[in-house]
Image 1 (cartoon, rainbow, N blue to C red):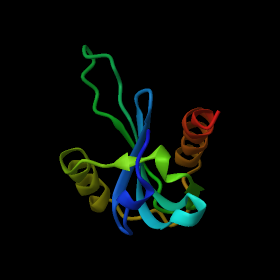
Image 2 (image 1 turned 90 degrees about the vertical axis):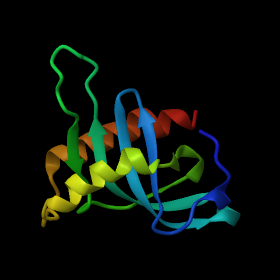
Image 3 (image 1 turned 120 degrees about the vertical axis):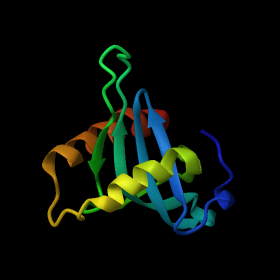
Image 4 (image 1 turned 135 degrees about the vertical axis):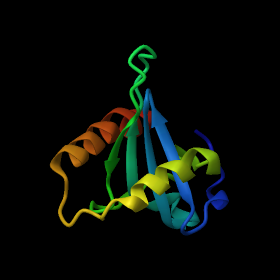
Length: 120
């Protein structure tokens, strides 16, 4: 993924994808001189490819977790039509008071598989 760092602004929702999993995050700040961004994970969405089961995607709420510092080039702007339905579902949930160990284990796996491998 290649984006100009200047393309992102605070409060913008961005996405990065690896295989059938999408990480949506809010841009907090981008430091252009250091080519680093501060992102607040919102939602991890795991899609299933099996059309016969017609399962809806698994949504994992990440709002109670830690922020990420990583290159902005790993993300792309989220498209309104893809993210608004997901944010509507997320806003219907109460923010978790504590970390959900399953959600953050999946986020850690996603980061290991997608973000760190992309840097090599």
